[in-house]
Each structure stands twice: as C-alpha cells, then as structure tokens.
Image (tube, rainbow over the protein chains, first blue to last red):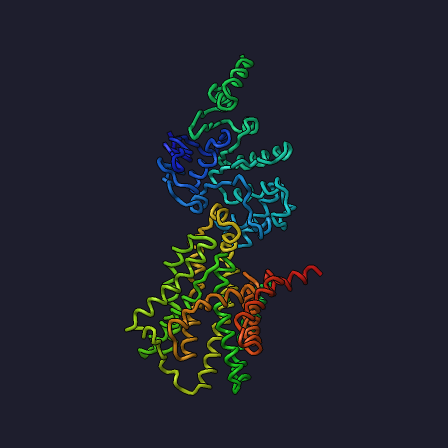
Length: 251
Length: 312
C-alpha cells in the first residue's frame, strides 16, 4: 500500500469538558476529492482547524506526505502544500484582489519577486473568472467573487491538499454552480480536495467519497452512494422518524 | 524609473543636503539648532515606531525603553573611554539584542495586551538601571565624558549626527515597506489568521520588525546622551519618549513612509508654539491641540492630503 497523502489517526480535541472531536481517523490519497458533511456543530471546522494547524489535537497523530505534522503551525503547513479556505471569507481588505492572491503566491507558493507573484496571481484570477476584479479592493466585490478570491489565493500556492470550508455558504444556486466548476478545475490539476458542507446535494455531484461527522465522531466514510444510503447517516440527518419515512420510500 | 525609486532618491538627496547644509545655515543659532536636533531625534523614534505600530499594526510603547537603553549603553562605554562611533554602534546592537527575545515573547499578545506588555519594558529597565548603581550611577545619573568641550561644536555635531540618523531611519522604513518583509507585515496587520493561512510566518516577521525598529531608537538614545551630556533614569526612560513618537506618526500618517517626517515637524512646531504662549498650561494645551488635529484628520495629515488630491 502506498503512503496516504493525509493520515489522521485517532485524533481528539477537547474544549474543557466538551469533546469536539472524538477519536477520528481517516486517510486521503493524492488527487482525491472528498466531501466532509455533518450538521452544525458536528465538528467539521474543528477537524479542519486540527489538520491545518490552527488548533492542536488533544490526542492523536496527523501525517501529511509521510511526515508527522501534529502541532505544526499553519504557515509552515501552507508552505508544504496544505491549504485551506475559511468559512467566513478572510481577505486582506486594504490590498487589491491581485495583491491578495500575489501574497499567497509569494509566501506559500514560493514566488521570488513581487512581479512574478503578480503574474501568477493575474493568471489565477482570470482562470477563476474574476479577472475583471484584479484592481478592486475586496470590499467592492460580491460575496461570490470574494469566495472565488479565496479559492484563487489557495490555488496559487500550488497546494497538494486543499480544504474548502463551506465555500458555498451564502451563495445562490447559480453562484454555487459557478464555484463548483472552479473546484473541478482545481481538482483536474491533481490537487486533493476536501469539501466541507452541510448540504448533501452539493457534495453528491462532486465527491466520489464522503466522510460524515456526527457529534465529533466519524459516523461513516466511503463511496458517496454507499454512505448516502447508510441508515445511521440518514438518521443523523433527518432524525429517527424522518429516516424511517425516507427508508420506507426507498424500499 | 519607478515612483518608489524616485521617492527613495528624493529622501536620500534632500536628507543628504539637510545633513550637509543645515549645520552651516544654522551656525550661530543655538535655539534653532536645538529645535532641529530635537526634531531629528523625534523623527528617528517616530519612523522606528512606524515599523512596528504602522506597518505591522502592533501599538508598541517600548520605544522609550530602547531609547533609554541606548543612552545608557553609550554613556557607560564612553565613560570607559570607548570611541563615540563605537558607542553608537554598541547602543544599536544592544537594542537589537534585547528586542529579539522580548519581541518574540511579547508579540504573541495582540492589541491592548501587547501595548501594556510593551509599556512594561521601559519600567523594568528603569528599575534595573536605578538599582545597578555601580555601573549606571543609579538615581544620581551619569555624566558623559567628552561632552565638556565647546558647546557650539557639540551642538553642531549632535545636529549632524541626529539628522543623518533620521534620514537613515526614514530610508530603512522605505526599504522595509517595499520589501518582501513589508508585504508580509501588511498581511499581518490586515488579517493575521489569513496571513498564516497563506504561509506568512507571522511570529518571525513581527520579531524582525520589532528588532529593526529598536535599533534606531537605541542609537537615538545614544546620540541624545552625548548631546545633553548628562542622563538619569527618570529622563531617558520617561514614558514620553514612547508617547511622543506615536502622536507624531498619528499626526503625520500611520504606516506611510513620509508620515513620521510630517508628524514630527508638526509636533515639534506645536510644542514650541504652545511652550511660548501658554507656558503655565503647556502640556494641557498641547494635548487639546493634538486631540483636535486627530479628530479633524484621523488618518493623519499626509493621507488626508493625498485623498483630497485624488478626489478632486
């Protein structure tokens, strides 16, 4: 068996008496697209924070590209190819869209000069369909454009693995389609992507694999169709009665 | 040539001319010489503070601590017969060496917490200096050897050195702002979490900024000590050495290259006007004036002028 790109082993994280993440293990291979779903408070963002170094696990081990990264800082992981976007967009407000992306090209992407970084940034903005915003400040961009700006910032850093934390939240159906198209484009370059969502329908069309979190625990993982039919997953999503109704319908 | 290159050359040329010309023009005008020297020293502190407070967004109150440290290092070395140039270099080194661990520790705090922690550094150094009287003379202070010559020569000399130091510090600010370090500091100021997310080693860059800012402050203290000829802990560790540069930068334009120059000039001018006219209420009058100015021009004089120009 080849070494996994990301290997999360028995990771837990406590906040006081609350076990936000409880003994979660999973593996990701290179170029894989995985959906991570779960209801509000299931621990999705906490798990992303643990893997990307924004939080330290209370227990457990995390390896990335064969090296142990437990407790490493976010900036170091970003430079090694482990990037994320934030649920609430986090632009640099006094920098133009171009320089927002150029900063990522410079510090995580390894661009040597500002002009080189800006060239890469320009290309990334154009191919993500927001080339017309290059000289805008983030405050003048729409939410959908700012979401794409986050994607561009992560992409230009040439990641091996990209966590997209609710990149579709707050967008309308048309805008979601657009962003999904961008994600496919990034995935086509061999970047492994984990899409964090609570909408099953968004991940269904995009992700061959699913991970389901429920109350901090790994409820199920595997091929999307299988997981989506898993009774405990349906129960967690719809409650006991809803699940019974839906399973009855399926039969 | 780029606008940055032109600005850098303009600073160097105008600064060089000021260093060469002003001591000649002002010869025989001790009051004006003193004023320009005070302006230059304040400019050094303001431009240094701007690196940490303006570029990085960490409101440091440690400027006075490095100023005082530099003053004492230089004074003690000169008392032991060390050449003044070497004493200035040693003062700068001492500032940088102290700033490295302090910055690494204290820059983990943000906002008000950082401000208060940085304020403590000066208090601690003041106590240490007062306590270690074998070396520092304690509360009795220290007289700097070699300052006993012709007062006019000394004034001219202090003016030249402080002007040169001011020009260098402004150029240092420009060099940082336009570098990769400056780009990283920009990101940290705007959003430190996002900065870490795109690979910016915030802890390291902040510490670099803190060290680079402390060195000119310490050298300024050394120049001040040689100029005044006598220092004691309450004078050189006075919290005003931390506060005045901040006010100057706020007046001129936070995070801009020339803001400290404009701000220091306004500050020194205001201080003189107020001293002359309302001596009995000088500190209060100065405070009221500064608050009014900041209310009218919150971004500072320089950015306000620029934005007015671009609007029209």
